Image 1 (cartoon, rainbow over the protein chains, first blue to last red):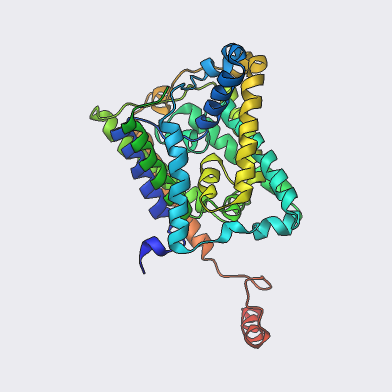
Image 2 (image 1 turned 30 degrees about the vertical axis):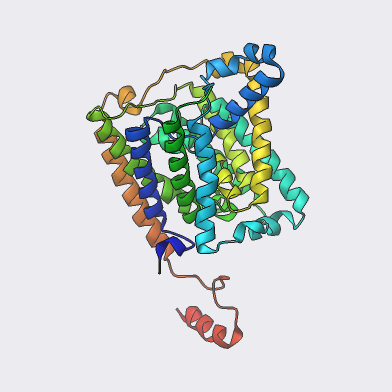
Length: 174
Length: 205
């Protein structure tokens, strides 16, 4: 069967190709791979447009060196959507259009509850990512593979906290 | 205001391959992420450890030959650790992380869209409140340091250790995942016509 039409690839194959993608970003684009900086950049641009005086007084943007020029990060954002779209189209994977089965078993079938808690989860994780200076891409892959102390500290604490949270959230089974 | 077209083109290509691989790897799925943290499905760990070992060897090779620079985020350990702890809570609730949530938009995942709107709010709150906690967040500052710098050993020794550890974890996981299913497990067939016989066999063991 044509591998492009398969729904799932082995995690070892995907991990190897992701690692090689990082060679490309470092060797050719001379950039690290990250996603969450986009979100701070979006806030910076929105504040510059709406409350420019205030934007200058927010210490975060300077402290964390949020890039003012739009380009690399935003292009990755768009590319991510297109790449996943093409992959899902090729395999006919339409799983994501329904609420996940595990979610429904634990939290019930309400769509608005699902969206509300997803919104809350997104807000919590992005607060953490921006405080730490990166997410599962920038710290979790790009940073850990460069053996950065900051990235390993982030990665290990995110994993520990995730396991603890999952056991508390799903302690009654499901 | 905008970076060069070549950087935007390279970014689009990188993002495309990244999104394609995340989708094929199944890590754009709520169940796969949440079951990793419930220690029931190790797809995320296998994918990330492989990427770290393969990527690390290549990036340090490029660095040795001066074909690439490292880009090390500063170690403000309080910010990194507290940020990681907070991130873990949100990631279990959403069942996606920023990269996989953006990719999941390409699968028409509406929960991911809600999560991304939440992420914008999280980034806003973080930027606005950071001034109050910046002193604490920056209280432990090791600079842009790597494990080889900190420990005073070669990066290749650490990468070799990581590779061996990853391989041991993978072998152990593959054995553990193929362990025989125990009696009374829901993994047994539910069809009574074929179920009874196999259940008796398991019981006899």
